[in-house]
Structure formats: C-alpha cells, structure tokens
Amino acid sequence: MMKRFQALIPAAQAALLTAALALTASCSGGSSGVIGGGGTGGGGNGPKFLWEDLNGDWIGQLETGPTAAPGVQPRNAYLRWSDERLIEAAESGGQEFLVGSSTRTVRFTAQGRFDADLRAASGSGRLLLSGSMDESRSVLEGSFQLTDAAGAQRSGPFVFTRSAGAGQFTQAMLERAWDGLGSNGVGKFRFLEFALDGAGVVIEGSMLHPTTALKIRDYSAGAGTFAFADSSVGRINDVVMVADQGQTISFPFLLLDADGTLLSGAGTESDLGDGVAELVPGP
Image (cartoon, rainbow, N blue to C red; front, side, top):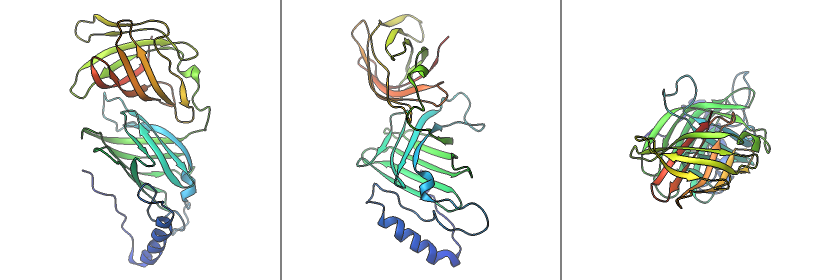
C-alpha cells in the first residue's frame, strides 16, 4: 500500500505545526472530519493558501493527463467541501466516502500542498490523493492510488477543477446516443448502447455479446430515465433500465465528466452480475 504521506518540517517550525494541528483537530468532529497541519501562514513571499480555499465542489477525473496509462478510461470523481471540511467524495467505480460511513484525513498547507487519505468504514475501499492547488485556487492536481472494495488497485494522475455550482451539468449534455462497455472484475464484458431524449428518458437501446455481436437485450422507449440528482457534480442517482426480455440494470449512481464525454458508474445486471459501465457519445 502507498505509505502515509508525511511532511518534512524544519525544527524551527515545530511549535507552529503543533499549534496548527491542535487547532484543526479541535474542529475535526471526530474520525470523519478533516485533520492536518498548515493552511495559514507560511514563509517566503509566495501565495498563502487557507483551508477556506477548498470550500465548494470539485469535479474531475482519476487517471487523466499526459502521464495517464494508455487505453485506460479515467474514473470520474468529485470532492465536496463545506465549512473547511471534506464532507463527501465519490468516484465512478462505485466508491463513496461520506460522513458517517468513512474516515477522511486531509492535510493542506500554506504552500498549497494537498494530501488526503479516504477510507470506507467497511471493506477495503480507499482513495489516496497527493498533489497541490494552483495559484488561481481553481485546480487541484497530483497523483492518486485507488483500492476498490475487492482489493484491486489502480493509480495514476488526477485533476480536479472547481465546479461552477448548480447548473454546471445540464440535461442537454445527456441528450444523445451513448455506447460503450459494461465489464466486471474478471474481464467479462458486454457492449451497451442506448439513446436518451431531452428529459433523459431512454428512447431505445441494446446489449450485444462481445464475441458473437449478437443482440442479447433490447431496451424500448421508456426503459429507464437518466436525470441529474446533483447538477453541481454531474451525479445521476438510482437508474434502473428494464430490458424487453425482463432483465434489469441498476446503477446506484453514475457520474458525467465536465466535457460530457464519459458517463460511467458501477451497477448490477440481474443475470450477468456486478460491473462498471463506461459510455461515450455514440455516432
């Protein structure tokens, strides 16, 4: 596992660090809060970053940028801060880190260094982030390591940008054809395609076998509805698609990226089992 991130602090700053830790820990609200040093002060003439600079919603992707692994779809993700506390985070592989069901340990320094260790209260789900905030206070970027509930890991670069808030994502971004893969953890997958109208309602769709290309599911008009539950972070909750043959696909939540080019989420097909769907705009 990735080692816990640690700061190398000169001895002359030890007293200041101790005071900052004590102050922040007193506001953490227990194991589900934010703890760490820094966030005020700092030496030199550079910008001074504050905890309040993190407040708001941050949308982005894990595994993106010039150093991303080739051929690997990124995971859409978001971070939500309120009153200088990280209260919610999620990624499109199905992991959520919420108040009451996870611990979220965060360090943010006056120089803009950002480290986070997010752990699910049950299972092995964990997300490690290490990076920095830019001087505009609108971008967080660095590297991540993600461990899913089954213990599988992936790592790479991440980039988050500050959301404009409610209305950042609109239903018009969903009104199109979508196609891609639904795959599970043992390498089995199916091709999935469907089209959505302006209200996010399925117009038509199908699922194909990857080897034979034979259609194994049909989805008629009204088979499901995709609508944003949170337009600040591109989150769509509780989608159920019902095939003409009777099988269902259930997604607890899906996330759309800021450009509207990747719609993804973990779900369950009633016959095929658990998996992750990664869909891009169709022709």
